[in-house]
Amino acid sequence: MATPSLLALALTDVSNALPKDYLLAALSSPPFVNVPGAFNTRDLGLLPTATGRPPAIRPGFVFRSGGFPAGVLPDGGEAVRALGVRRMFDLRSVQEHTQQPDPEVDGVEGVWLASGEKEATVGVEDFVEGEGEKGYEMMYLDVLRVYREHITRVLEHVRDRPGEGLLFHCTAGRDRTGVVAGLLLSLAGEDRDTIVLDFLLSRIGTEPAREHLLAFALKGSKAKSVSTPGFHNLSQLRESCWNAFVKAVQRDYGGWDSYVTGTLGFSDEDLATIKKNLVAKD
Image (cartoon, rainbow, N blue to C red; front, side, top):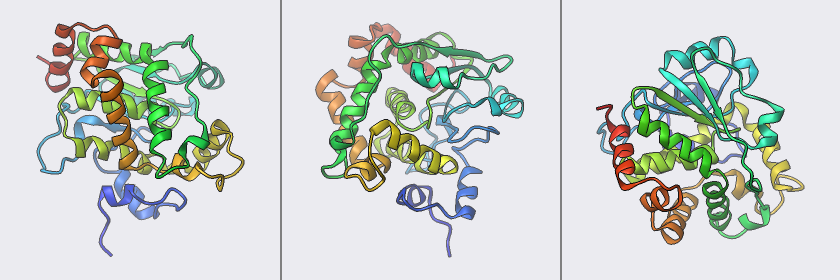
């Protein structure tokens, strides 16, 4: 049997475990990178594109990941430094960060901000219709609002430190991390299909922690069980849900550029520098 493509593997229903051989092959290949003790870690500059051209973001600059438990040390810390990462941005809530603070990695500055607003919330009932597009739209717009200070710090790094790699993560490296990744890929001029693929790849990257994350989602959504209407849609990543969110960004903010300048307060010159630095150092 032929090895499935990354996209085909990413479309596997979340209710089913991924075949171990296929999973290992995927996690051992770009854009995934190995950081012992962490999961769902990948280089946005190594994403495969539909045409085979190089990805828009330069390799070795922007990394995304799932959580960084204390057990990531020491091997995981060494791996992060070896990637060239000099700042690690924690996109988690106050409660998540308090329960499991990021480990201190020598040579890597940890950045975390306590949001003063209500944490982004998820209501499983919002995911019942269709493939859950309404719920994803609401949840991801909430990320743009609640975590705007965190996103600002990430963009400031891209603007001011183009020679220093950065990594950002949340608990699963899926939703909050996915929103920031989509923003950066869009600013870099990446094509839609590649951005959608990056979004869907979290299905593969989170597989090692799938059961734990499903339990985390059950608790966060207050669903009674995995059979609660809407929970499967909440747990399953789909292209239609990402597209619904992007349309909402256009509707509510006028697009990604306008979100960066109008809501986050960056100047047009800042935005131009951020776009340039994502693609090249100089």
